[in-house]
Picture 1 (tube, rainbow, N blue to C red):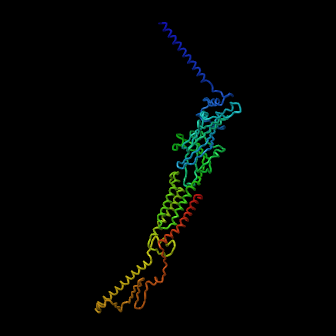
Picture 2: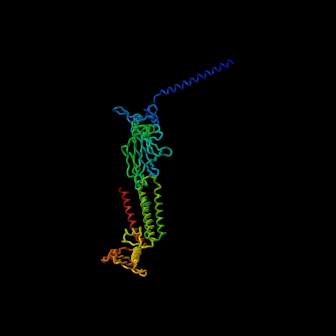
Picture 3: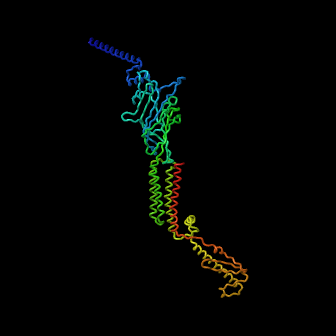
Length: 514
């Protein structure tokens, strides 16, 4: 029993000693590794992947730290300069409703990182090291973003289209093929004869101008695919610009970081092609307006065809205009296309009003007397009709006749009262007119056509009240309502087209000149 216990203790001691020896050997190995120097670069047999691993080893490279550049004179730390170039493959037509456009482009960033220079460590001639995303993940890269983007993504099928190039001098070029949907504020005051200015804005996200500066390449910083085509727009011009954006406590453009940040932008001037709108909107609307004038050649009492023609042209034009405005945002200002819509609507509605006017005149029964046959008197007489002069004359004759007879009755009654007061006259002589010698002699004549009242005194002086009226010749002309309605239709056949031509002259002058 005692021997068994001793054997067990011996086994335990042996096991403990063996485990301690293993730990000591492992610790010595780790200590030897930690104390080992960085892997050497002077090895001509290194492959590119091995060279990159040694260049980016943690002992000599920190990808979280930007490359430092010092002034050779003052030894002052300078910001790193990132050269930028954009090659545009494709521009999609502007989305007027969402105020955005889509772009496929190659974004190329170039900077120098002297920590990655390897021309002194390999045999000449040294070649550039090319790689894709796995190579760029081992390097420090500037964080650049689109300031006006709605969404963006890197293109690619199995692997993202990112190309990294490292030169023996330490020049790094990152080329990324990407798709971006960018915001573009548009002005539709002259739609569809408008031109839009859409910008692409690049900014540094993390580093301000004291650490990083963005600059355009000196040669061809912006270029476009020669095969690029736009359907609705024509690219008239483009330009680029370099600015500095300020971020503070109010304008949190770069998150919680404050300072001045470098920014690059390029703007394209896109002019809208008007061929589609001329053929599908302006020419049909002109034809619809011209069709509404056909009602002027129809008789004024032809109500069914004229009403149907006017309403059908109005509805057709409204349908045509609504199809053009569906793709535009609802803005508060008046567009040029809306001015055209209002003008054409005015002419179509005017033809309907003209029909209602002439149809009302046509249904009148009394003739209308005009002083002169011209537009002024015809329109004035139709708006404020007057009775015929024979009706006026007849009423004047009746009134004069009544006034004459009443004067005669008054004189007779007054004379009778005088005679009866003197007691010299009998009741049988009441039908006779007795003239007092001291009273003036009054003669009253009642005519059927014209009432003439004359007063003659004892000295034979005559006062004729209507002498001037007899000497004035009549100058009035009578027209029937049907003649006036046809006269207005004939004038409208020339007035409406002339006004529409004047409207077109003003409209197209404003579009192309102003």
